[in-house]
Length: 330
Image 1 (cartoon, rainbow, N blue to C red):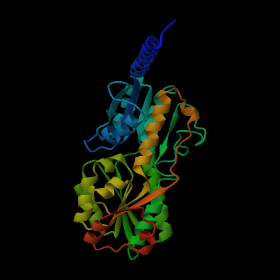
Image 2 (image 1 turned 180 degrees about the horizontal axis):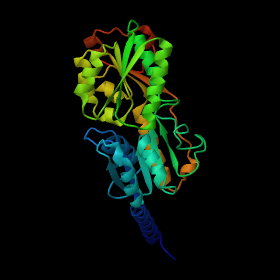
Image 3 (image 1 turned 90 degrees about the horizontal axis):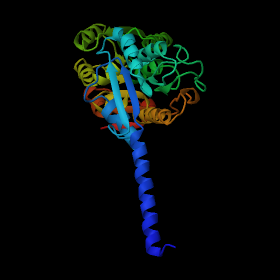
Image 4 (image 1 turned 30 degrees about the horizontal axis):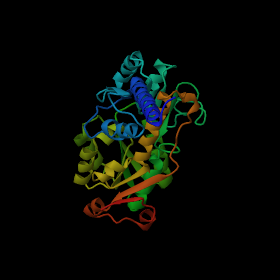
């Protein structure tokens, strides 16, 4: 028989061995995550290093131990996306995160077995990614940054509320043939027709913003709708500075664009969006099937307004907007 002291030593040793074994087992299973995007990643990019990486750490992942990222980007050249999708599939990661509609569609053409989790503002049924939001089936699921459509029409309506006297507005979109952008343009044009205002659509090559804003200014719009695209999130500071230079009240997709000096944004909470994205990656790495994970849609949208920018532009925020604001930047 073991005395109490001997029993304690044995029990403690068994517990320690089990704990060490569990940790070793956790470290031994590495979740290999591929990321495919059209844009070039910058240090301020909210996908890696900030949002996705932070939320994966909250879920118990440590890069280099049980998590490995494999990132490919098209350097703003959307023509490269199909080839990069092919290269990514050849790496056979556990799951691929696709940022935007074009990368997701390219991956859909390349694999029916590797799980794909997308982040987009396009209707995944309309663009042909999944047959159902509740039951996506196949190997693709994802996170939407708008509950219905792209919100382009709604944002134009809010811009008109801000400058009700304006009869002409501009929409800035990247020179990207992606289906998601076409839907944004269609929704904005439909809203413009309903509101009885003109809409000038200006497509810009990534980085060539000076010429684009000169074209926008020449049209003398009363406000600017900045399309939802990762190019514009990455290049937000340059776009915000040009909007200020031309004194254009502008509405954006992401709160970060307003925190960095933009006037107004309307959409999903960015932190919640990336938390959900990380949660789906985690569940797939633990064995969940994409077909069993319904497409996540935000139930609450956030209006963010920068009062300092409004003052600099000489814009008064109407009560119809100030009563709905969720975050105010002073």
